Image (cartoon, rainbow, N blue to C red; front, top):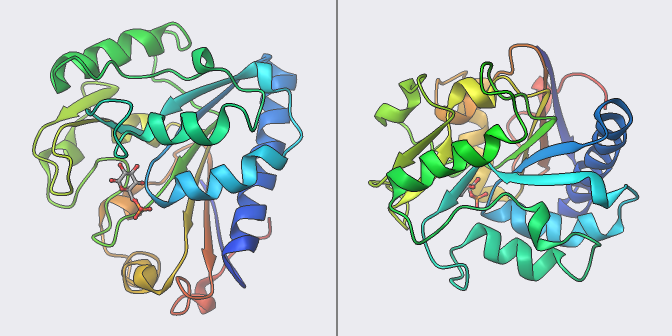
Length: 244
Ligand SMILES: O=C1O[C@H](COP(=O)(O)O)[C@@H](O)[C@H](O)[C@H]1O
């Protein structure tokens, strides 16, 4: 695994760098496979992508957008990650609704996870682990990523690509999430975190090496990138690595 930790001056620079990386990865994937398979997270990432993605240069028709995790709520709810991207990206980019691989919020979490695996099987051969070109990840103040929370039994889940969770410590409680074997099989995983509220957890993971969920993201045959602004990265400037 190659690992890059970069602390940039402010959130705008994080957004520019993140979207520049997405542009480069999309071009490479489209050249090689004629399709770009990317996984999106919710939370603060929705804001970064809503600002940055409309400015990039790419062949949008080749994109297929999946969810690293999703909440089992109606699409109209402010908690629906797809709902947020739908309002922010359809109309401001050439993306269309059918390029998003969405959950069915009418299903139970268990049914939705199985259904999502079925939908993924159209794009990934069922007999090996899915290999996303890129996963865009967030990290909560407790160190969770996707809907993989500290101390939760799903951290050990290895038998399915996508798991249901009905006791998420962060509301809403019912969600589905990619599991670690899939996350760590991606070509490139990128964390973007900004603001002083993330400084302590960033230090615990990147400096102290605590085995929190976000710290367990270590793509076995891929690239890991952490993009931080000065506020989030204030305690880790001395552990910056690599060049982007
Ligand atoms: O609940 C969630 O939280 C994480 C982190 O969100 P952030 O707002 O602290 O960046 C997010 O990555 C995940 O997709 C979401 O469901």
